[in-house]
Image (cartoon, rainbow, N blue to C red; front, side):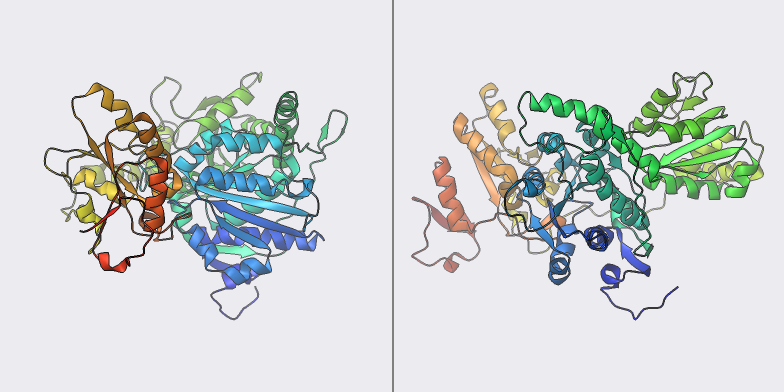
Length: 582
């Protein structure tokens, strides 16, 4: 192993050896590695990175912005999207570059990023862009931040379902090494198949730290040799998404591009049998973070690779969740009595695997979300960790394997579950010291306010006569629908400035169009406080904002500030604006 002088930039610049980095930093390195690989191939390529911040990818934009020289050297352009779907549309545009005159590069790659709700709101552009296809020397990786237990989201997320609906191949890395290796293969898969490729990143992977091996030849891309309609495979790129072109592209996606993705997965071993026990009775299948949870669980149960082989257990690591490559599944299932799929949330892999094996003459019993009797086996809600997986696997193995290590671990879990919970000090989430919105969110007696997306949503637990919450950008539209059916004449609505510029301005326009009596409290602090304090994309100064609101038809506008004197007498306010001291 080579030794290198230590540098904080080593995680991005070091091209061979071992590096130490976080999941977010691995995502920053990924387009740099792709550029280096293209350069070695004689290709002159660039990359556009765009999307919208949000946990667990809340610091990704900041990590890119802190490295302008690095990005410039590798022809990476970072563009913070106004919101997720506009960022995705910009990525869509990057793939059309070589269809227009005078391109600067042989191809442009795209890397979109967004959290779970952003994946949902981008469904329309995802489908349009995926139908149109990627550039011949382009390719797109759609990085989806998945928050399975709502650590920083209103609802738990399961992003691969949305990406599956958009017909994206979906890759699921389980750590920093996977991000670098699977990510490189993801770009190549996109370029080969013509499809956008989903890249699921869960909270623990984004926030996690680890070492990774890097080398120019570490990721070797094999040509699958796929043929389509009698000739060598080359996807069609066509942005004319109207009949009959859309129907022709739909046919190509199902019978060309997705089949090409399966061939690529097989040729490049995106799914791997990691413990190939010859005479196994049981096969365990997992992907991404859950695969590593499974490996830890097996170690906790006293089952290393040798023990797994001795007890007839085979192990399969899935890298590409969709489309499921049938060859590896049939190979893995051969001779098994039972195939056990361990995955979080809904059982997508289980469905795909069962579909592949259903018409086999000899096939194993397939269990996952439920056992053969229909009883819950792996929960479809919440999050899996190593302990949860160990409980599930131990309970499943115990009737077949009489092992002291299994019984001991189950007894330990039973003892831990009976132990009284430790007394800890519970601290309710609260506003930062000095935050003006601690006062801004108070409502007059007898009034109600609607909550909104952002840290000010904490008021829901503060007893401040604040009710309900919508998706990001819908703030106030719920009152538009409620107002005709209640005697209550008016409602306040909290709206952060980051959300306003993201999409909330449309809700204000809806309220004006409906003639609804509502007071929006625009909580202006020039930062997206909840995801790292970044500047709000597309933000404008307060005076200009008042003019925008006036142009939208808002009847009365008040500006409340601790420092009215900061606005000189010639400030260009909208007509009739009043400036009050808070």
